[in-house]
Amino acid sequence: MRFAHVVVEGPIGVGKTTLARALAAHWGAKLVLEQPAENPYLARYYEHMGEHGSGRGNPLALQTQLSFLFQRVEQLRELGQGGMFDHHGVVSDFLFAKDAIFAMLTLDDEDLALYRQIYKRHSAQAPQPDLVIWLQAEPDVLMARVRRRGIEMERHLTEDYLRALCRGYLRYFASHRGAPVLAINTEAFHPSESPTDFARLLERVERFQGPFEFFDPPDAPGRAADGQVSDTIAGGLIEL
Image (cartoon, rainbow, N blue to C red; front, side, top):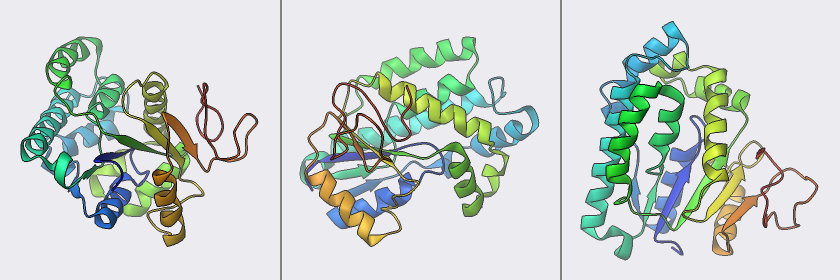
């Protein structure tokens, strides 16, 4: 395993958990997954989304976000104490900053101010991954995948919410100054399902140089032959 700590990130339905499982199994790494079923507010948050829409104002938004935040704090603290980053390698399906991306979409101004105070107390202690694999797909594709997997509480999700979430990720990575990022358009490239695509991804990870590369995007003006982006982000689904 070239990178001691790899994070697979992206919006709901993009396939990050499936890919994280495959990478951890291949590398023999510790797998650390987000645990949405352990969030006691999430199902009711989705229910309110169905009743009141997917924007701000959901009465369970703050509780849901803080529950996820504290869950991630505890998971990463346990990893750091166990020395997993040094001895076994870790693959996870979330960035610590992920919760802040969601909070920007779901919390009103007053709750967001409180959330930020709590977030800042913990973010400095969160370990930075060595590589982020950012999976992307258009909102309609994500919506189709969410429907196909058929998780009951996700039936309240809307394409508009997924579109806003994709934009949130774009804004985050546009100003990202942390771990190197390998962005992947998953609409025509399916490393979780295709052994050939999985092998191509592994090869690309091995020759990754960073700090930001886009893997296998549609042809677009300004993109180098190997998909690497230099001082601008171009091609594929990235629109800044």
